[in-house]
Image 1 (cartoon, rainbow, N blue to C red):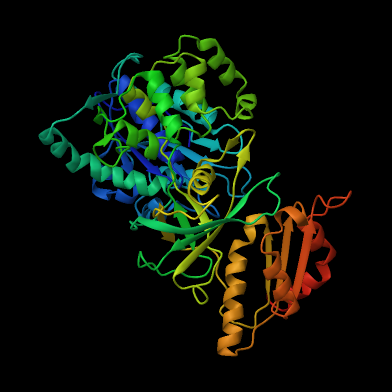
Image 2 (image 1 turned 120 degrees about the vertical axis):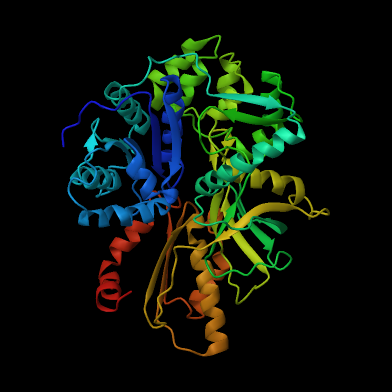
Length: 541
């Protein structure tokens, strides 16, 4: 349906619904809401999990910012809304004749059903009589989704009759340092509830789960030669926390930023690290912190200080820079900027950025947990959870979570076992890995480096079952690849023993840098295509 300029009466409230899996869509929804304040519009950001048909029916204008998940479906928080949307086909064609909508989608052209959720929302609502006030935006995460959103947002505001022209200097958030007890108590009743939703979404958790301080029993380097990298084996104390786990389940680890980075940023900006604060917004958005926290806690546990800056973040930092030309170059040559791995603290320091704390806290994305598949079996080790983690390094910098883990290892386990109990904040999450119900079904396992973790867990469990339950099992074929046999062939002894003892019917190894002609797992798969065809097509592997 052709987009039309909005015809609503002013002033107007603007509900902005979002369906988000990793935080991108909700982030765009919040950005749009904060911009709405500058146009004199009263926005309200609404999680689609809280979609209320009665309220929706009363709204004259509704905006949707939705991500597509899986094979063209809705995100978890938008699942019930999507069911209603599909059932709306049974409604009268003019049921939404007085409704105006605008839709922006977050997708990736690498997937067949690109932005299907956004297309469905727009098509099904307009089929019931709603009018699009601007063309549906189709953001592509594989290219420049920030640019796609900026272009759509410009089109939206041009079509939407805002009460006033944009006020560039309109502040949407302010900070209150050292809030009194009454102020903090009144504040917490609403904002804290909103923060819980934001936290769960940013964590990619579909339901409230208890975050545990789990003790690290041991850390061990698995590589004999660490000149080209490091792979650590962690053993966590599940018994003390009362945790029970399943083979190849996922552990979400909540990392923190490095203390020296936090202190350096605070010193650059003149912030007092131990000062408590609350943020006050002029717009109803999910609160970014779990209550009244100190500046130190906010910067260490919640603000992403090491992630890739978006164009939007760079544009906001430029506003507070005494040397904005370099930041302008970053924006103009963004693809080149991405290869430099500069974090927000470096950009602030190099470009003399002085930004109010409230604006910085509002600008930062939130730290989210990192996920690691368990590489042990509860049948073999019911009280100990084992993780296998490669320490990620880009140029001279380590990854956020792997850098956090590496710091713990070097401080507490490198030279000697930790004398003081050492803990990490973790939560268990169900894994997508599922074994076939029929134990005779052949299984083909393909893993490179630490990607072999879930299969180590399953093979350990299979070994225990064979010895203790005497059942018959189908063949296990394991394909494993790494750079060098002498460097990163982790779990070598286990794999060889399993093959020698007949637990593995096939062990296929690819060491890409051990010979002149590089060998990869995909080459082994191609070489064994006849066997694989028989296992998959004829035997149901």
